[in-house]
Image (tube, rainbow, N blue to C red):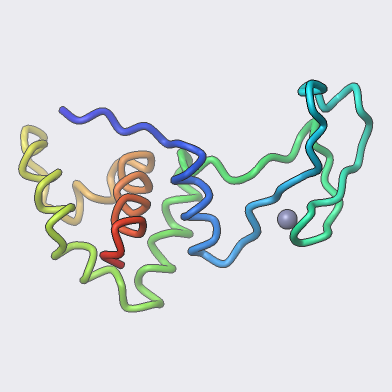
Length: 126
Ligand SMILES: [Zn+2]
């Protein structure tokens, strides 16, 4: 069974795909503990203030994220393309032990789904 790991690269490509800002902040150098720097901080891209102690970019490991990605795929005519793509078929064939119908298998696990969509996006499939 393939291990699906959500990376910052995947999170960024998915965030920008669904039209949201992948927030970036000034480089605080070695001061990685944002709570010691004070809040709020302004995103360099969208210029919105964020409390870095609390708000981070989307994780794409939650059910809420899967629906956001799923709806974007449907609204942009990409869901069928994704389902019929080589990358999805290959992962599905390697993971058929759970015996679900392809689409059920695809969207059943939020992290797996989002990782596969990110892979497809980075490979230019969708
Ligand atoms: Zn931003």
